[in-house]
Length: 361
Image (cartoon, rainbow, N blue to C red):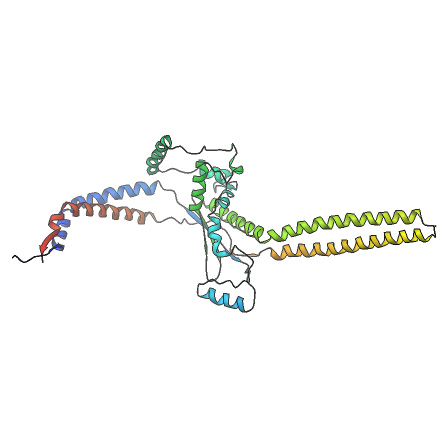
């Protein structure tokens, strides 16, 4: 009986380098073509600028043991909440909040202006009609236009409204694309140790990048403020209504007492005196209620102010001077490397029988 022999694949390094040496002309050709393609892409790609804002939110945790333990936990990158906070929205979920459709749609009507003063419009219109299209993007646009003919999509404006009156519940295809584009341009990160919020906006125009970074900061502060003060503001509105009712009832009771006293000023009958005392007591009762509601109104106003969060701006938005795009040389070198890699794969596949051999073990 013949002995069973296993077959193995072996990579011949010498054969590989020999094939690589013999293929150097085509390798240089591929790298040259890739370099030319890289230069063409780089020259037609606009520069991008990044503007950033950094905030330090007010801590809503209680002092004491629970607050100290939470502070120690944050130092090692962990987050604990021992019932000291009434908030369901804390800094760690701000990035998720900014990814929501409602937040992105709220950025549509913001007025922006290019740094050369040639364009002043809304952010939605800027992203929709005033974006440079590079030559290498046209094939993708043609494919999209071709797909639209076979795939039904929502109308561009389903409700007949402008960009400033977009319904987040029902966005058109174009509005959805703009919101997605905003999500790629606007980013938010939170330092787990310090809870510092960093907001960055990238755009091809430095002034628009800085404007949007400041606007996103304002929108985020407004949203958090409305959330934190929501219950207190509802309580304040209720107390104001009770205060107005108490004031009206007190005024009516005082007028009735004054009118009765003036009409029966010279009468000494006990029945009249008793009626006058009843009206005076009623007026005093209404006044006490009115005074209590006035005090409660001041407390409710103070509660709204107490619940209003304070944000410390660590870094304000400034118009960037230097672009944040990758250097042109690094992008061209990337294309050259991809061209080299492509030719290497093709060469290895064609010479696979010489490079990879079957040996019996």
